[in-house]
Length: 391
Image 1 (cartoon, rainbow, N blue to C red):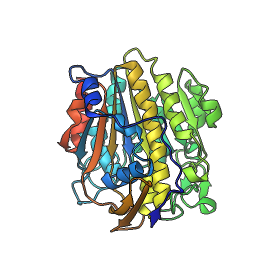
Image 2 (tube, one colour; image 1 turned 180 degrees about the horizontal axis):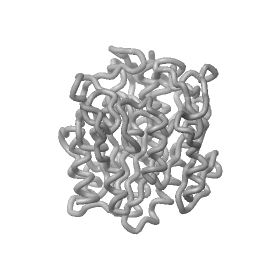
Image 3 (cartoon, one colour; image 1 turned 90 degrees about the vertical axis):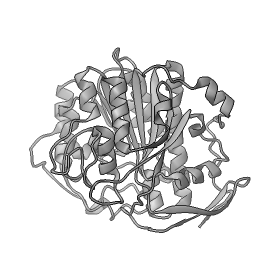
Image 4 (cartoon, rainbow, N blue to C red; image 1 turned 45 degrees about the vertical axis):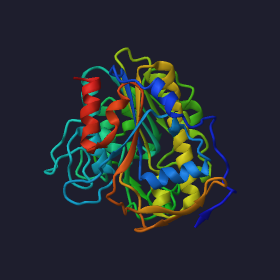
């Protein structure tokens, strides 16, 4: 498949940062007050380079000060998945494939979100899609696999997540009989685990978390127009009942706006904050071999990264980390034209849920960015974040 000049240029006003500028702004001597951790699901070097070519090199990613490589391999198999990788990021412990902040014996592990809440820092979660995505839930709850939706959604209430924005209000009030992620999601579509075939009923625990959230002081809102008006307080912002549409289906600027809104709210925390942001749409497009959609989604993620970087530049106390998760379907670039913004790709292991075991890129900006260079175990990200915010 070839991506030609018909792909719109999406520059977002950013350009590559040259070496002299990066050296001038590189911060090494202080710990950050705040950390924004952005998980770029499925994004290896090839996915990022495809987006760079399509955008003619004009990505916010070029504003980053440091770059390195990260492992993604769980203990039981070589090729991992988003839950096990995010478990390593969230807890500093490598576990089994599918693990959601539990160890090899499925015992709960202390997460970075729990630790920072104990220190009275604010916590936020933003998802480009649903709030029960595999890369998101290890920062919210504990389970042997991500399908334990009732337990994991309860973590938003019981864990006191101050601000969270994403789709999935149904999961907080109903039991959803989910299909496996290989069905009903071709190309990163908008249907929730199979669209019309989804069966709903009362939650097994009989709880309606939406009512509980309101009773405990959260502003519970159900569209991005209202969500982006919020300036303070606790927020449960739902952008869809189960899933959001992909960027080609009309998602618009919902994701970057969600990141910007969460930062505007969290900045009022006098002790600092931890914000976890997850985008899984590049992953799905790559699994399905949809190169144009992949590039469109990667550039929308880059817009969200730009919102975080804009905040960090103004604030001067915020570390922004962008980390890949297990690379989606063994993508490689086999041709292209930089001047025309054209790239050609192939996948060695196509299909949903197929991930390679390669190292993935990570990028950092702000105080402590120099600590995320070279090749790191994914568990080291937790250790470094904990040292910066808690120890």
